[in-house]
Length: 555
Image (cartoon, rainbow, N blue to C red):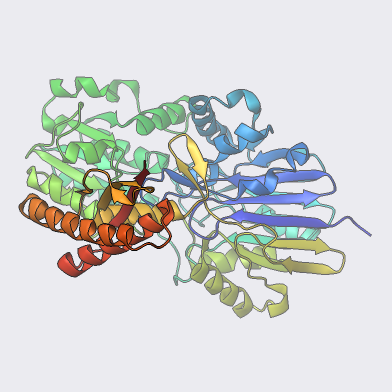
């Protein structure tokens, strides 16, 4: 009887983000990615959202390593947080571990790990797991499919993938090797990207974008071109640079992450921009607008990103002018649409011409659509299948796709964050909610899991706050001094004095009655009465529900 193998999903099954799974057998635990999720508008003040790393708290001695499949933040962004409590080596391609290195240096935890680069088709034993790493195409260079040999057979994790027939770097997803392993040993389990499982057809090749970019430069002779894309999308940057240089332009980078990733990619030979055509941003002013292409961060209108700052004229590096054409070479991430549209408005107000995916084919997805998913399933021929990486409706669509290809429904399992699957000689079992799988939020230098703080912040942001204070003498049962009401965000200047005076008068009357009433008198009783009185007044007079904070001082 072979030892069991369990996989606990700590994030990424139900979200596009915080991808992380723990693969265990015996006394060994191997992490598969460790990413973050970027917060949405329901999480004001949060910097990022982490996977449920609490599952690892009593397993630190078991962790033998982490495989990072590629360099996107939703797969590597939580490593620094995990390494603050645990120490383990990290395996990934040279480009991916190069991206990881800079983030761990910034976080001050680089000394708690060993970064181990692995090459395409390399075999590496990580504890009891015999791993083989295969090339895969995605929207970041050097992604890896992981074939993980376990006591219960081989597991294939697709990573984020597409089947691009003409990738910019010529590095194809190795479907032939996958089919070969399937024929020789078979795959016990497939874990596969579900992001586009509900989208028919196949994803356009990244190389197709190059032709569109060539047309952009041809149509904007004499104008400075500023492109915005993800800084990790080196293949997009390559196509932008190639088209720019062919049109007689110099290329400069804007934004720290763009500068860092372009530098790393050039150092590794993944990005080819000749030295004479690559200039520093501070040298741009020495050229005519039509001689320049700036490659910038900020395609998602992040508040402190380079392009977002330039849009509001708050950039120390660049000022938007009427001779600028801005090329948005990405789709807005779901939830970012409003922010991106506001940024575009600001750019247009400054006279710029803005091109985006609504005008022309300036972007293509890095995730395979249904026909590509079907091709991978047919090559792998898994005994069992669990969809990963996607929102819940994506994973449900992937289940339906697998069953449509002939997989028996009982061989397809739908898991969500916090669930665990267990491979044994008898098959695959789903154990629900082994760990809460809940959100842990990063606020500056702190991490916490109290969701109530966001409810408070949303109330404060939408309705404001009213603070009522009073001092009482409990023995004399009287007010000491007068009650005071202050507010922020509840009233504008025109109403503030009148309504504040009214609520103070109402509160004074209620408290005097309470003190003269002879009943129980404690800080808690007085606070409840103050909150109810102020809340009822505020709602009846203004129709709003700000946060009410009573402050009682007992003398």
